Structure formats: structure tokens, C-alpha cells
Amino acid sequence: MNPQFNKGILELCVLALVSRKERYGYELVELISSRIDISEGTIYPILKRLTEEDYFETYLQESKEGPPRKYYRITAKGRRVCHDGMRDWQVFIRQVDTLLKEGEGK
Amino acid sequence: MNPQFNKGILELCVLALVSRKERYGYELVELISSRIDISEGTIYPILKRLTEEDYFETYLQESKEGPPRKYYRITAKGRRVCHDGMRDWQVFIRQVDTLLKEGEGK
DNA sequence: TTTAGTACCTTGCAATGTATAATACAGTGT
DNA sequence: ACACTGTATTATACATTGCAAGGTACTAAA
Image (cartoon, rainbow over all chains, first blue to last red; front, side, top):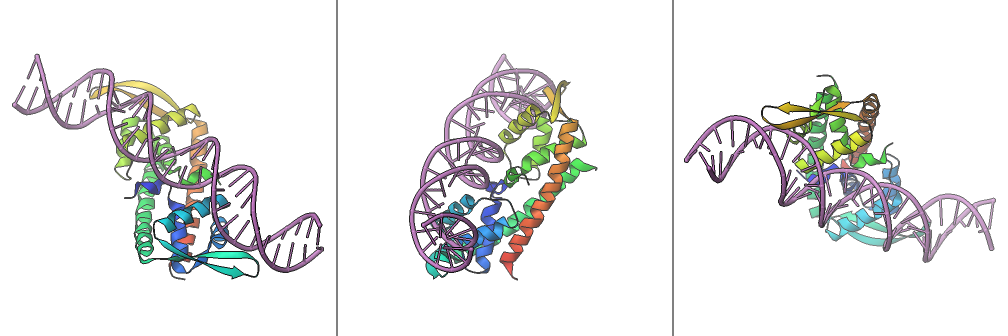
């Protein structure tokens, strides 16, 4: 199991969202921060990292609403990692849940 | 929501397990590492931190099976924090789940 | 022309987990 | 006697990651 999972949940969220369809950074910031408390400065480094690891490809596209958007498209490699990550995450939270219940009542 | 939650799951596990009954460090290491992948060096610093923040009280007790054990007992303050933490964690994983599903299929 | 919204990126910092090892006691095997 | 294994605590150096804050820049509305 990925030991990074203790913190790497955001990475997985980004992977999952981009795996569904191509997205740009700001869009991801909006999507994710609507659900969980993150700052803008968190997502861009993740995008950079995931791109450097060849999980994403990027292209620029002009926008009428502001500066050009940088879109991220998932690669085959990225899709695999995303898939495995989702599975690991499910296992992880089940284990945590068991531990928390061992705390609670018995 | 506690922004620390992105990583602070182990802390909550320790809190929950001690809240159920008094435990010593090594016991917690065994309990937790049977479920999730951690190294021994992870739990003791957490115990120290939580004790410094007055979530735990400690006492020593001799053991026939080795050196004396340091037991941790949860305080009222710790119990509150544990309770809130559990609630926040449930909310958090529900939000993450929603995000992951927005990735998946739609 | 100033403000607000969109959009991207970078830097320094703090928190947290990892790896590794040192210390120490008790019981078992050689 | 000696070494090894299991129990038990603690400390240190290190890497990763998220946070806070700020900088750049384009568009549209006030």
C-alpha cells in the first residue's frame, strides 16, 4: 500500500477529476475547494508534479473570460495510477474505519 | 474544518483507540500497524504530541514481558477533540468520495 | 481607470510521516 | 555464557506535502 496515502488524497482527487474529462487548473481549484478546504497554491504544484510524472499531458487554450487556460489530459499511465489509487483508498478508509470503531464502543 | 485532516488520520486513530481504554505505545503500534502501513517511529511522536497538548495523561507500569510500559489515558479535553475529529473525518471522506465519483463515470 | 473575476505560478514555512538506530529488559535456544 | 527474538521506549535526520502569501496577467464591468 502506498504509504503516501496518509496525506496524498488530494493527488488522487485531481487524478480522478482529470480522468473523467480534460480540465484546467483553475477549474480543479474551484471543484475541489467547493468540497474540501484547500488553497489555490496547493493544486498547481500537484498538477506540475503529476505532469512531470507523465500522468498528464497539457495544452493551452484561449478563453474569453481571462488569460489562456492550461488543460490537463490524463495519459494511459495516469489512468492506471488513478485506478490503483482509488482501490487503495477504499481499502485504506475501510481499515481506518475499523480502527476507529475499535476505539468507539466495541 | 481542520485543514490538518489531509494528513492527520493517524492522530485520530490513536485518539480513538486510547479513548476506548488505556493503552501503551507498543500496543498501539501493533494495533494500528495490523491495519495500515506505518513504521514504529510514527506512533511515539504522535503520543508525545497528544500528551503535550493535554489530550492524554500517562503513567508507567511494570511488565513481565519486557521493560515497563507507558500507559496513556485520555482526558476530557482529549475526548472532546476525538469526538469532533471523528465527525470531521466522516464529513471529509464523504466529500472526497463525492469528488472521486465526479471523476469516475457520471 | 479602478475593481473584480478569471487564470496561472512560485517561494518559504510548518506539519507530519519515514527510516534508522540506540537503549533496555525478559525469555529461549545453543 | 552468549546470541537471538520479542517487548518497549525514545531520538535524530530526512523527505514529502499542504499552507500562506504573494506576484503576474488578461477581460469585463462599474
